[in-house]
Length: 336
Image (cartoon, rainbow, N blue to C red; front, side, top):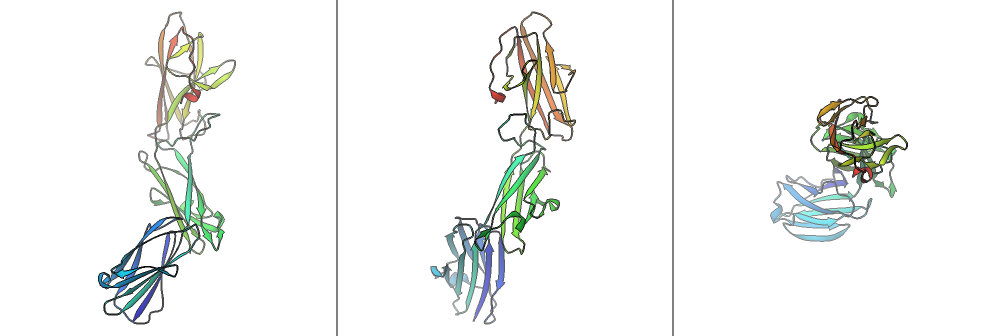
C-alpha cells in the first residue's frame, strides 16, 4: 500500500499537494525545512515527521535530483545546499515501515530572495554626503529589490505583490501590486524598528521574504559660523574650544537627523542658552548672533536644545565653548 504526498517549496511558500493514493493508510508524514525560506547557496536541513508512523524503525531513503543521497533505518534528517537563484532542487523521500507499508513524499525547492535597501527620512545640511542616521521617531523609507526567477526570467516589481509589515504588524495601505517601497514611522519609539516584506507572484506560486532591523539613535546638533562675507562655512563645524577672533559672530545650528525637511521647520523648537541663561534669536530661530561687549578674555558656553514638537522622544542637545581674545582653531569637516 502507498500514499504519495507532494510538497512544493519556492523560497517562502510551502504547498502540500496530495498525489494519488493507492491504498488506505492510517499514518501520515510531513517535511520540516530549515530555513523555512531558503535563498541561493544556502544549507538546508530537512526533517521528516510522522504521525502514526514509527519512523525510527522504518527504512527511509532520500533522493535529490533523481539521485539517491542517503538511506538507512530511522534516517529522519537530511541536509543539502541550494544552487543559484531559480535553480530547482527536487527532493523525494521514500519510507518503508516494518510491516511493508510505503509512503512517499516530495519537495520542490527553488531559491529566491528579497533584498531591502533603507534610509531614514531625516534632515541633513547641504553638501552632507554620508548616509543619514536613523533617529527616534523619524520616518524610514524601505525599498524591496526582488530576486524571483520564473522560467529563467527575473520578474519585475510590477509583476509581483508586496505585503509589508512594521514590527510584525501588517501595513495594509502600503501593500499591493507593484508597491516595492514603504515609508513608516516606528510605532515603538525607543526600540529597533523591524520592517519586513513578503513578495509573491500574481498567482501566489512563488514567494520571497526579506526584513531589516533599524536601531534608532539620538539626533545631533552641530554649530557653524555664518560668515558675513562667505556665508555659512559648512566645511568647518565649531568645536570646543572655539576661539573668537572677531568682536561679533553669527552661529548657525544644524539639527542633524531630525525627522523634518529643513532646519527651520515649524515643528522644531530651539532653546538657546549662554552661560546657563536663556537667549533669544533676533532672526531665524537656528541662527544666533553673539557680540563681545568688552576686551576681557574668558570663556562663554553656548548651549542649545532642539526638540521636535511632533514627537516626545526626538530631541538633541549641543554646546560649544567660545574663548575670547584668541585665534580660531581649525575643526574637522562637519565636526565628525
